[in-house]
Length: 210
Image (cartoon, rainbow, N blue to C red):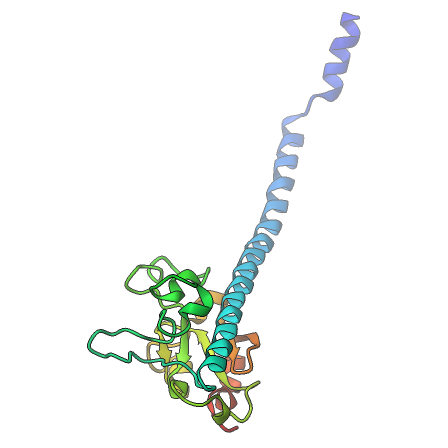
């Protein structure tokens, strides 16, 4: 019995070369799988960000229904205090966080934002078109192609192509989503676009009457 046991141990033992081969295979598989897992994680964050914008889209529509089909303000109604942007409780807040005050965008942070962007004085994840504040929804002739909200670096943006192509700052936060951005349109739908696609369509995106 002892002789058989020793023979069995010799049969299942690994040589150093075999062990190195196994380790090499594991390393190769890990190098192939890790980028895929990283991409999947980034994609998940992009989808979650799009869902945030979808929630804002519903709130914009509810606000319009309650207030004569107007867009909310995208600029402080009281410049002295710097309050009452579109994302505050004064406007979209009741539709997104009933019975709570404060800035609603802090409750819907972009999951791909950097630590600096989530700092309490700079939590600007999404931006509304400055030209639509306190305007009638009906001025937009093609709501399915008119940009309302975008991943951005401030709370409002001006519809100027030079901000979108990076010639001026602040601008769209393309770095958050693989050189692209989630866009909320006036009709309420959300789409992801690469920077090149945004620049190719920037005129209809930013024109009230395309």
